[in-house]
Image (tube, rainbow, N blue to C red; front, side):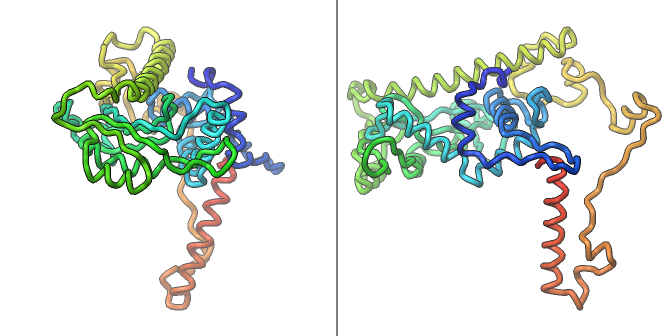
Length: 342
């Protein structure tokens, strides 16, 4: 699995940018989830493309919990700091040249749809996503921007350049913008050239309807290699994921080439393909397998003042009282999740 492939050295580097781990409460609460387990679960999802619900329990962190931490750490800026630190180490080792950058994009299918998707102009208008990548002279990824597959290339290049990270690793002020930028004909725009020049960046963008052989490909090939490497890595880990599913499900899986293409199946179709063992409701399955079991419905607790019979809309407690109710509710919610180490 992907968990076994995560190098310890990577987590040791990432750990410095993550919030400190919570210690177990001596009162006997559920122990908090360790950062290492969270990172393993995140890496598994992001590299295999599986659903958050499909994260295996062996990783020590559920997919839902990993998703919450992913969002929390993104808001805290953990990933940006980790990326900047990796770039700093590369530049310090003379393996990064941020003075010259290359831009290119790749489109992928988006089977589940989403906000950053659009009809693909090269795939019969099926939903897809365009990832525009900014790399250095050696192909190291510096920034990436995601948009719908129908987004115009030349409208992505300026926001992508403005996402250029501040890169240290050498004496002096960190590099804030590149000196030169290379791109193919898809980014041909005089307005883009003028904006890049205004930012102090020399543009090298091929023009449409001109003969090939400009020589830009001698520099641009590194971004295509990086895109191919990223897609190849995802394909390798996706194969590892499918092998793991086949091992777990055994002979129950149907021999169907579309089984792991990312399509969404109905319950009946999933049963035919061997992805599930049966269909039924929660109460039906529990009553059948565990006749003596009783299902307890967990509902959110009402705020303290509401439990005392003081409604938020009361004229006595209107205005400031509503804020008090909201504050108490937030504290109780936080205390509830802390019981589970979240």
